[in-house]
Amino acid sequence: MTAHSDQPIATPPRAPSPTHGFGTLAVHAGSPHDPATGAVIEAISLSTTFAQTAVGKPVGEYEYSRSSNPNRRNFEAAIAALEHAKHALAFSSGSATTANILQSLAAGSHVISVSDVYGGTHRYFTQVAKAHGVKVTFTPEIEVDISEHITEATKLVWIETPSNPTLRLVDIRAVATAAHEHGILVVVDNTFLSPYVQNPLDHGADIVVHSVTKYINGHSDVVMGVAAFNSDELLARLSFLQNAIGAIPSAFDSWLAHRGAKTLHLRAREATVNATAVAIALEASPHVIAVNYPGLDSHPHRAIALKQHRNGMGGGMVSFRIRGGHAAAERFCQLTKIFTLAESLGGVESLVEVPSSMTHAGIPKEQREAVGVFDDLVRISCGVEDAEDLRADVLQALERAVAETAKKWTRKRNGTERNGVWEIYTGYSIILAT
Image 1 (cartoon, rainbow, N blue to C red):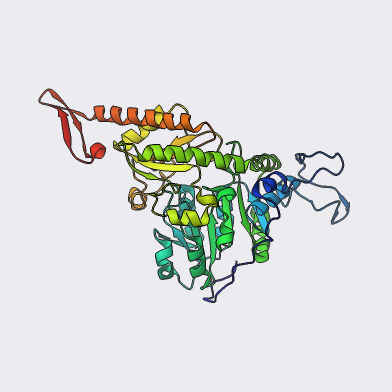
Image 2 (image 1 turned 180 degrees about the vertical axis):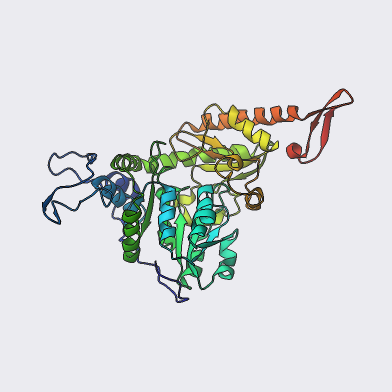
């Protein structure tokens, strides 16, 4: 990967503007008809090896499935089209995608990252990357202070926008401009929005990554990742690592993810409609301390959403702080009837979790809370069910969770039971009975 030389770099030219709309590309990109049978849906190519007509002369472009496979190649072509990229490479997971990109950095390299990243990314940065000599600096306000953190060793800037799970937004163009002045590449994790809602390469990023497991596949049955970019130099480097490290998806997973991507635009739109309805209901509830959703006008970075997101869409993810602390957050997740208590996101089904005890449990408490990941934070992934059903489910669970948690604040003093609802619930101390 290009070393930091304190010399400006130009944003690589984007791929040619697509001649068709997103939905048309989602259905048709990377989906050639079978020339022998005319099949409109590609076959699953399970073969690990491919015949050669002579030594070193394969019949077609494929030799061995770790290096390349028809299903993986077609999926990569589809994602490149959807992200307005020249190239895309698929990996066995989103974490493997992160690992391959960080592995491209030499020992002694420095990375600047937003503070509130996915727990798995934080784990890789602080434990694995550190072990092979790559230092990562975290900052909560990367647009403001990026220049303060740049050193001669800085090679990469890592952004999540929206961030996981607080849904903070980052002005990609502002960060890319500052980074490129020093010859530093910018990576954007676009998992929370998907290519339908946001295309980071259009805003100056060098690489966009996804956990394909989430919105792109969208059916909670594939673990996979992908990186898309325009640079031929990055293609040479990252494709070498893709093959050498071997963290590649199976042909069947590639086929499933490609099938899922064909309906991405439909699912992403519906998820946004549902999340907006849920966020508005949460914001109006007296049982909620704060709501994080970039589709709301109250979101502090709403202006960025209007600039970077398709039609200012907020996406399908919402997080909120519930009155009653961690106990109320846990109880809320147990009381939902449509939302399933589970990790992950972006599937057709709606999910709910408590980041402090689940997806972000590995991050020290003080670091979590510094970026807004409190014990009372609940993260919601809205699926494609009916909006009114999801809204009603959230409100009934909220009402019951807060009420039940309040009742549990009981103490016995001198043999007398006293019910107290403490600051964690109301914001001020009151005694209901003594």
